[in-house]
Length: 392
Image 1 (cartoon, one colour):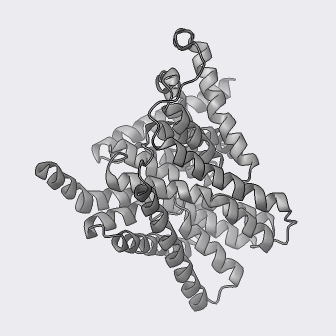
Image 2 (cartoon, helix red, strand yellow; image 1 turned 90 degrees about the horizontal axis):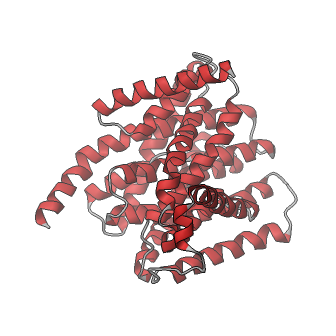
Image 3 (spheres, rainbow, N blue to C red; image 1 turned 45 degrees about the horizontal axis):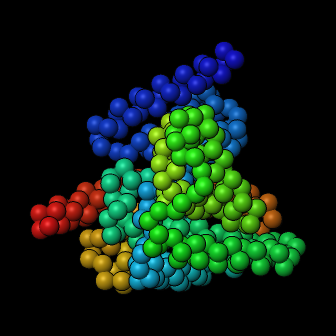
C-alpha cells in the first residue's frame, strides 16, 4: 500500500509540474499526461513498472471521454450535414490507400504491409482530436462538427478493419463475424437519423429521486456508459463508439442532466490515465537505437497525412486556412492504430520488428501531433476565427 501511494503521489506531482509548465506555452494538458508517461515509465524513472494495468484502467478514460462528447455534440438535423463528413472520410480513405500503395511500391512492401499502412493513415485519434476541440471551444464550430462526425464514422469502420485482419491472418471468419458488425453499423445510422430532430426523450423515471440520490447518479451513469461500450465491443466494434452513442441518447434526456457533474471527476482522472498509458507505450530504448527510421517515419506520417486531409477539406470547398488546420487535426494515427497493429501481430500477419516500429511511430505521432496542431491553429485557424467574429 505504501509503494502504491508513493507511486500515485509521484504521478500527480509530475503531472502537476508539467501542467504548470505547459500552461505557460499554451499547450493542452494531453501533452502533460503523455510526457508524464514517458518520464515515469520503466525505462526512465521506473516509477511505473506494470504498464498493462495502467493501460487497462486508462481505457475507461476513453469511454468516459466519448460519453461526455456524445452528451455535448449536436446531432446533425439535416441530411446534408451528415453526408458531408461521410463523403470527406470516404475521400480521405481513397487518398490514404493510394498513398500507401505508392509508398509500398517505392519501399517494396508486401500487400499486407501496404494495407496496414493504409489503415494507420485512415484511423486518427478520436480522443486527442475531440479533447483538443473541446478545450478550445471548437466542437460547436462548423469545422469542429465536421471533424467529429468524420471521427465517429472512422470508429464505425473499425469492425470491417478487424474482419480484414482476420482474413489476412487466415483466422476463421464466421457469418456472425460478417453480418453482426454490418447490422450494428446500420442500427447506428438509423439511431442518428431518429435522434437528429428530437430535442427531448422522455423516460418513465422519477427525476426528483435521481437528483437527490448521488450514489444512484454515479453508478447509474457509469453503468450506462460502460454497458453501451461492452455491447459495442461484443458486436466487433469500438467500445468508445458505444459510449459515444450512449452519450448522445443521455444528452437528449432531462432526467440525466445531473450526469455531467456527477461523472466529471472520473472523466478527468481516467482520461489522464489513458494518455499516460500512451506515453508508457513509447519504447525509449527502441527509439534511441532506431531513431533515424522512427523519426523519419513519424515525420513522414504527420506531413503526408496532413496534406491528404487538407486536400480532402479543400475538395469540399473549405478555405485553405481551414483545410490546413483540419489537416493538422487529422495528421496523427490514433489509438485504434495500436489495436490494429496488436491484432496483426497476434494473427502472425507482421513480424516483431514491424510491430515495434509501428507502435513507436503511432505513440510518437500522438505526442508530436498536439504540438503540430497548436502551431497550425496559431498560424492558420486562429486568425480566421478572429476575422469571423469581427465580421459577425
